[in-house]
Every structure is written in structure tokens, then in C-alpha cells.
Amino acid sequence: MKNFEIENLKVHAPIKLEERSTFLKTSLSDEKKNEILNQYREELSQHQDIMYAQGKYAVLICLQGMDTSGKDSLIREVFKEFNPRGVIVHSFKNPTELELKHDFLWRHYLQLPARGKYAVFNRTYYENVLVTRVHPEYILNEHIPGIEKVGDITPEFWDKRLRQINDFEKHLSENGTIILKFFLHMSKEEQRERLLRRLENEKHHWKFSPGDLKERELWKEYHECYEEAINKTSTSYAPWYIIPSDDKETSRLLVAQVIHDKMMSLKGVKEPELSDEIKANFALYKKMLRKN
Image (cartoon, rainbow, N blue to C red; front, side):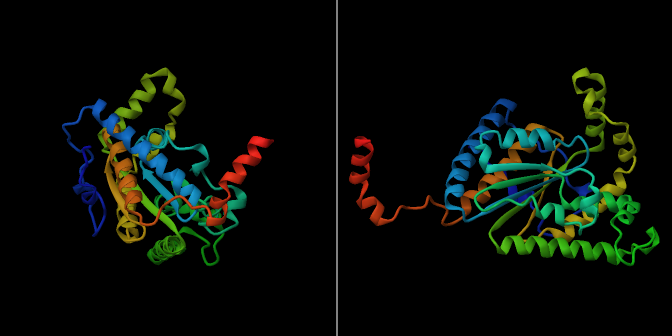
């Protein structure tokens, strides 16, 4: 099996997104990529069944990226072999009136995976230091004490939110949740092509929104916010991976390999064993079943 050097994708030290490639050149054909991806899927699915039976670890997969970066199709392709009871996908939209009455992490906490399960967050609590930072007026909807106008939102406010995210993730990690975070790094040119395809292909018209073009104009601002958030929250217990995503097949394979390698490295994941007493009575149980 072809393995990529995924440690090169992991954020160990402060990075500049403009210095990270959005395309990973490989000699693999799309057919070969899908073949390797399928093997990862099957092995992860089998491993998750054991993990579910044991109930020791939970897994939180966080996906972030600009519009059209391929989050939806990646989720479909990477997790398609999983038992549906073992993985839950959450796509977070604009917060509701009720959610705005709680702290910014509350609605995400409600969707965290139980031990033995995966949760995939399609857009995450990081939106609260990305979208709201590019559009700080959204913060006013949270009615935070001391924040009456946009001018009250200082750089210290964002530092505090990033610290709270680190604390949140550390708490989860210390209680058995494996956290892997992926930024699907796509070029602005590739986004233009994908948006054009949505306009040119009738069956994809529903995916297009004029709002995508408005947000595209803020590309530089979003990348600056992503850069700071990634640099300040990539930790040993909740690392970020920068995934070159101009080619969707490659990005899916990279994400699958990161998850696969992490899960296969866990120690002590095994099916729970029956007690000696139950094992000793197997013959009796068989007799009872055959009798009835």
C-alpha cells in the first residue's frame, strides 16, 4: 500500500498557508487512489466495530475549509463503509435563537461522540473564530456581557476564545476522545472552477448561492483568520493537518490515511472478553437453545 508522509501535513509549528501547497503531486492514478482508499475504509470500519464493542475511545473528526473545498464528498467517500450506528455526521449551520442564548461551544458539546463512536463535524466550533472574526457584527447576536458594539471586540477577545477552544479539546482528550482536525487547503483558482461547474451543470445548481461570491471576496481575510486559529490550536492532543485539496481524490486519501494511522496506533483496542463463568457454560447454553 502506498503511504504518504502525513507527518509533513501535521502542524507542528507556526505555518503560513500561502507557503503550503494546495496540490500534492503523485504518480498514483485515480483508480489506484480509490483502491487504497477502499482498503483504509474497510480496515477502519472493522476497527470501529471493535472500538464500539469496547466502548473505551470516542473519535471527533473536525473538517474546515472554504466553500467548495470538498467536505461533503470527503465525508461520503471516507466513511461509507462504516456501520451507520458507529458514525454520526453533524453539519453546523447558523446558530438558532436557543443556541445563541448559550456559550459558543454549547451546541457542539451536545453533538460530541459517545465512547465507541465517531462524530464528524462538517464545519465546527472554529467557525466562531473564523466567520465571526471576518464578520464581527455576528458576535453582537450572542449578547455577551461587555460587548455592546463591534468596537468592544478586541484582539484579546479572540485570544480568549482560542484559549477556551484549547481547554475544551484538552478536556475531551483527557476523557478518551481522539481529536483530529483537517483544513482542506484549496487554491482560489480551484474554487473559481468549482463554482463555475455549479453554474454550468444544472443538477448542481442547487449548491450555488450568490453569497458564495461575497465570501470569496474575503478570501484573504478568511485565510488570515484560519492561519492564526490553526497556529494557536494545533496541539499534541488535537492536531491540525493541512490537506492539499485541489484534487479531491488525493485529499480524501490523505484524510483517510491520517485517521487510519492514528487509530491503528492505539494500544489496547480489542473486543471485550466474556467471563470464564460464561465460557464454561457454553455447552449448557447450546443445549438450552437446541431444546427450545
